Image (tube, rainbow, N blue to C red; front, side, top):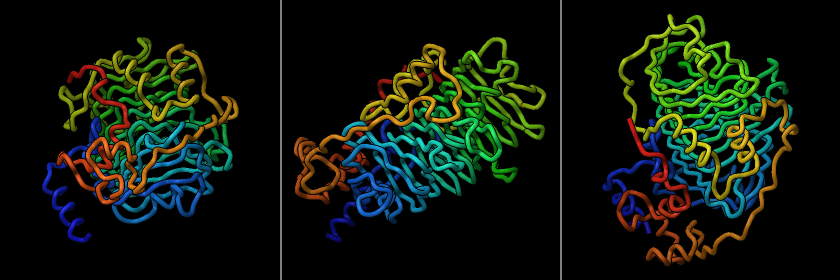
Length: 430
C-alpha cells in the first residue's frame, strides 16, 4: 500500500501540472486543491461531528470533499479553513445542492478550490457576518460557480495579505443594508484587498449599496496588488457601484457590463476613489450608463495604454458577457435555486431592489436531497462511472490514481465531469 502511494505521487509529480479544473482561469488557475489526497464524504447536514462539512474541511492533509446529501447546513459558528490542499466539489450533492446558513465560511489557507456552493448567512444570528471570506495570507485559491447573498457586511470578500486568487462565475447578491451592522447601512458586495494577483471574472453583483467590488491594497503595506476585473455584470447598485477604491494598485477593467436599477445613483463615477488613492488602470470595452463617468476623479488615476500582466482569461464583449453570466453564473449545479433564478430575472427585467432582510424576499428555499449514486468502495466515484471508465468499484485506492495520465486524478475527472462545460462560453477575444 505504501509503495502504491509513492508510485501515485511520483506519477502526479512527473505529469504536467494542469489547471485547477477545466475552465479555471486567472491568477488562481494553478491552484492544486486536494489533488492526490484522500476523499472525504459529507454524509449529513449537521454543524459538526462525523460526516459533517465542518469536520471534512478542517482536517489536515490533501483532501477532496464530496457530498452524499443536499440541503441547508445551519452553522452555529463560522467555519474557518486553516489547513491547505482542499477541494470542495459542491456539484456532487445529489438533489438541489448545498447552502450554508447562519454563519460564514472563511478561507485562511493555501491551495483551496471551492465549487458550486451557496453561502447565505442572513440576519438570523444577529451579528455581522460575511457569506464567504478569503483572508489571512492565503495563496492559490479559486472560487467557481458559487452563490453568496444576505451577508451582514459583505457577501463575498477576498481581503488580506492574499495573492493568486480567482473568483469566477459567481453570483454575489443582496447584501443586507439596514440590518444589524454596527455602522448602520452596510449592504455591500465584495471587499477586495491583496498583495499580489487577484482575478474576478464572469461574476454577477446585484442589489448592493456599494462594493461591487471595492478594490484596495493591504492597508497601505507593500507589495501592491494587480487586479484583473473583466466580463463581470454589475446591477442595481445604490450609492456607488464600487464604493471607495483606495490605495496603490494596478487594475485591468475590461468588458464589464453595468446596468442600473431605477433607484441606482448615476451622479457619481462607476469607480470612486479615496483621497489618498494612487491607482493605475487599463480600461477597455466597458458598458455603463452614458450619463456616468467611469472614474469619479480622473486626475487621481493613471491610465495605461497596455493591460497589466495577468494570466489569460477568455474574454468577450461586455454584451456577450452579460448573456453568458446570466445563463451560467452561480451555484447552477446540481440546479440553480429560486434565489438565483429570481436575481437573474430581475437583472433581465430591470426590477428588484436593495433589501434589509432576507425575509423581504421569502428567505431560504427548500433544498431537496435525492438518493446518492451507489458507491461501494466509498471513494467518491459512483460504481457505474468507475465501470464505464475501466476502474474498480471495489478499490478505493483508484480515486487518487491517474488512469489517463493527464494530471487529473480519477476522482477529479469524475467531479469535473459533473461541472458546466467551459467550452460553451462565448467566443474568446483578447
